[in-house]
Length: 68
Figure 1 (cartoon, rainbow, N blue to C red):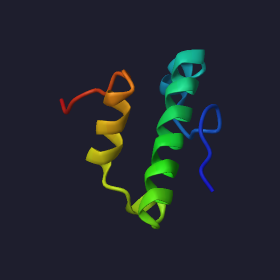
Figure 2 (figure 1 turned 60 degrees about the vertical axis):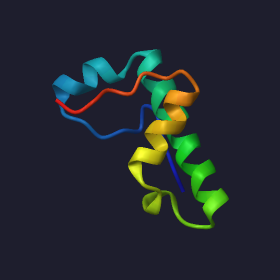
Figure 3 (figure 1 turned 120 degrees about the vertical axis):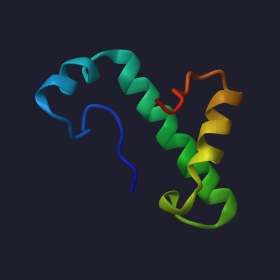
């Protein structure tokens, strides 16, 4: 089961930025991408390589932050 959106666990400071609609939509799309890639490869979302998730999100025009 994948859950996304306002059910995310965070500290008090981060939570203030996670309550906005854009964050919830981004988490939902990332969860959907992970589920899609897992279903296509016959595996679990946890086993899908993160670069594959990032690549599909970018293909769909989403902003994927790079490493700091």
